[in-house]
Image (cartoon, rainbow over all chains, first blue to last red; front, side, top):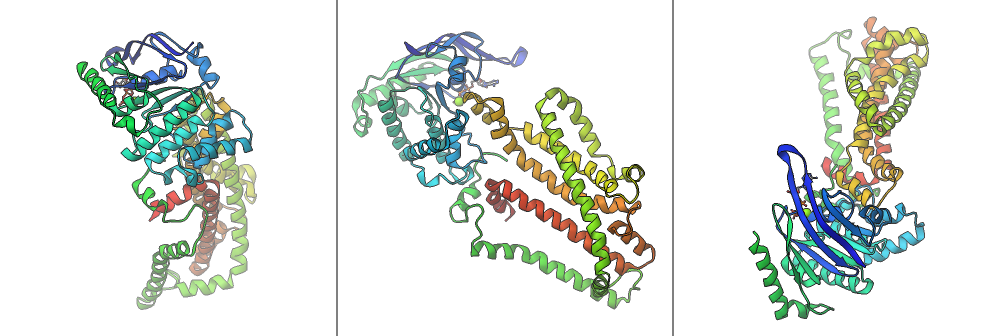
Amino acid sequence: MSAVEIRGVGKTFGRGAGVVEALQNINLSIETGEFVSLIGPSGCGKSTLLRLVGDLLAPSTGTLTVGGKTPHAAREDRDYGMVFQKATLLDWRTVRRNVELPLEIMGIDGEERQSRAAEMLALVGLSEFAGHYPWQLSGGMQQRVAIARALSFEPSLLLMDEPFGALDEMTREAMQDELLRIWERTKRTVIFVTHSIPEAVFLSQRVAVMSRRPGRISRVVDVGLPYPRDEDTREDQGFYDKITEVREALREHE
Amino acid sequence: MTSEPHDRDVLTAFEGDLPGTVTPSALRRRIKRYLPALVLAFLVLVAWEVLVRVFNVQEFILAKPSEIYATFLDEFDTVVEAGWTTLREAVLGLVLGTLFGVLAALATARWSGIREGVMPFAVAANSIPILALAPIANQWFGLTSLTAKAAVVAVIVFFPVMINTVRGLTEVDAGELELMRALAAPPRDVVTRVRLPNALPYFFSALKVAAALAVIGAIVAEYFGGRTASLGFYITQQAGAFKFAEAWSGIIVGSVLGIAIYAFVLGLERWAMPWHVSLRAADDR
Ligand SMILES: Nc1ncnc2c1ncn2[C@@H]1O[C@H](COP(=O)(O)OP(=O)(O)OP(=O)(O)O)[C@@H](O)[C@H]1O
Ligand SMILES: [Mg+2]
């Protein structure tokens, strides 16, 4: 069964003179356990597409299913964890309690919550900052807290909107390695939005290349490099070839 | 309040103190911060004293600080008793006005129909001189009843508290609401975990204004008549008899009350919003 099925989906914002056709005729089928990246120029509708999958927006045309259910049912069942483009931490909660937020809403008891939050914070390397407030963290650290929060309740689908956008190159690569480790261990489905071609190629099994106005998927590139991927992958000729392929696909449709 | 990190905050985050702790360095910084104000107050008093002496200003026009101080000590029991009445009126009014203001805000924020009907009215009501109601309240509740003054104070406090709390409950970051929706949070969780904490800074900024207004409101309401032992009555009586040193003694007590209530609210704010303390400390500097 496919984890996410997108059929003929379009999304139009506004009406009259201010109408914006953000997405047009999107078709994409993502297998359970698959890692797929969305890449495309700013404003091509990547965030919008994630919101449609997460039932945070309703499509204007077409249909979506998430794990065979409607996006609404999937959201109600908390089947997905979302990492937004903006970290969106609650200012009044410490880092630890921000990570615990989904667990609190799900009614999981205190001790279990704390141990899971501690585990997630260790995973993103922020154990020492558990008692800090968001404003005491840098932008990149805030984004890592948001990732820990999305992972905390172990959803089967991860929707990640440029989660590493605010990180420096070194931390970024470390987080990519970490994300792949988590993915290989737990075999979750991941839809990953990024602006970085090497990042998309390094992480994904498939890269969906999008073009702008209206947003469409112009090409889907099969990466086909073996996992586990590591430092050697980053220096592999096959890696560079795929980067070139994605770059050309992006340029073709500009 | 935004979730954007301020560079300055991030820079000072790790060298400073964690919220709620007072280290010796923090204490020293605090003293340093208030020192200019204390020095200024002292200089003003000295200048006042000197000018009155040099220009030989008559006592019934402007009293000297030294004289006011001596009178204050003489009149201590009287002004403190008067102050006690005024304090009770102000606090009762502040508590009632805040309570009803918050309840009204919760109802108003909850139902957008009510909000659209009520908010323009509340904003308009907030700009009318409610103190003008004092003579009417005196007739309703009796000239010497605490309730008459507390009622006026409560109405004065009600509107800013209500308006600001409604804003705090409704002006919530869209991203935070989207996050709660993604987590399929029930409406109750959205209120308790996002809207209420979001409203706290708005509520407290209104409460700080209201705290100052409460004492002013109580004293001015007493100007229209009230108990003999009340600050407003005492001040008008003494000033009417050209006993300015006595009148000033009453004003001193009124100032102390205003500052005390304000300081209490400030302490309450710090206690209720531990996440906010250091942020504000950084802003103040
Ligand atoms: N809520 C909205 N109302 C109106 N228009 C919107 C809304 N959300 C997005 N759009 C429009 O839809 C288009 C796609 O926006 P979207 O945020 O999905 O782009 P994106 O690919 O995520 O861009 P970026 O890489 O800059 O994050 C843009 O033209 C944007 O103006
Ligand atoms: Mg986006």
